[in-house]
Image 1 (tube, rainbow, N blue to C red):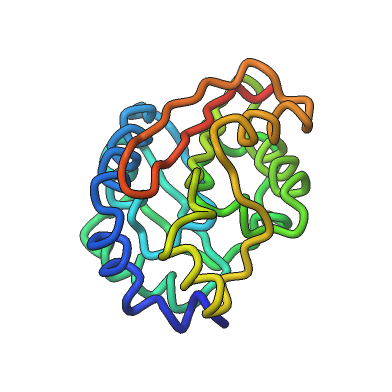
Image 2 (cartoon, helix red, strand yellow):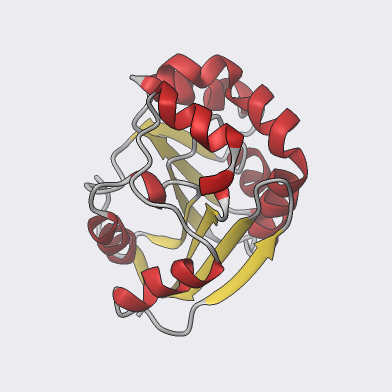
Length: 196
């Protein structure tokens, strides 16, 4: 699997190529968390968001479908006692309805065959009135890094800019989304909405 194969170098590429945007994005997402929150993170990758979220919340369940990525997350988060790192599929979550206060799914919707199914699952497991946070790279279609990742097997299904990202949620009937663009070489647009 592509993501397990690149897990060992993923952080290096993300830091060297897009460190500023990633730092801004992870800090912003962490700032949305509260100390009593039970948070689900889907597509946690190597734990780039996990290490910033966990210290701010009651508990974090970090999931990914790549064993290589999960191994890196476990290592990175080994000193945090309020985190569980588990294998999971964002389109078929193994959690009860309304189990979490918040969910984060970073940089994954562009990879999914059926993003609607993933959004539906996030809405199912987050309690009504809870918050769903979905950061996604924008303007990366023109990026050399995106081109290399895709040639290597990443399998991007869609590319976003600020307008098409807003259309993505509008087309799913999700209104009242707040957006925060975190600038960098490959900017990230953080979509935040209340679960209704």
